[in-house]
Image (cartoon, rainbow, N blue to C red; front, side, top):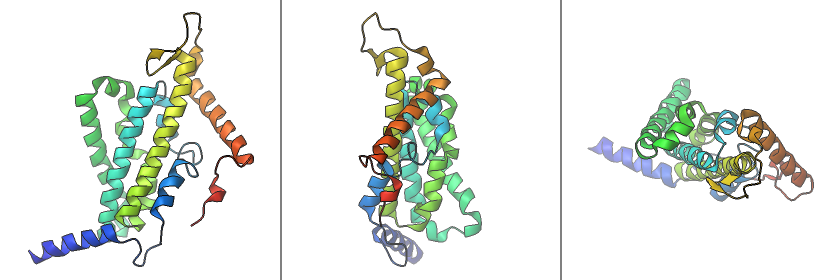
Length: 230
């Protein structure tokens, strides 16, 4: 009984603790930097395999983004809560087991409640397990910080990842199919560029978007990694 009480007290302290011998962080900055300054796709260039494969439609982009964000958030919370009890020698396998558990929950939920989305995303749902964004945040942040900052970090990176997926998929769907969310937006005379919904179209769309963002960075209209403080 006493051991159980100690466990819950320790867990509560971990949740409330923002410092306590750890690197002091600003939770709000951790949230915002994942959206713009350290966007996992447009800035860090991470997790590009599912990005290039599933962004043929906005629905796919939203689905993959939400699934990844859920896994990222849930795994960050658990890893941060038990970080002091994980032996350093087995931390990576432990992280992967935790991540895989939440990916299984997501995969089974999508199969049950969104079978069409499951067919569209296919193998890329279980591949979230090895997404370097999630494992990277677990190793670089959640394993070194308390729960609340880890939640904000996961939400920021998740929102940034989902937003980037939506932007890329919107460009590809509009140009490649003439639709947005499945609804036609052009007249019958519009000839879609079918290459945009093929694999080369993903590289074209992403390259153009990153080029525009880099131009805005040069003009100081878009925050860059060099602007990060704290």
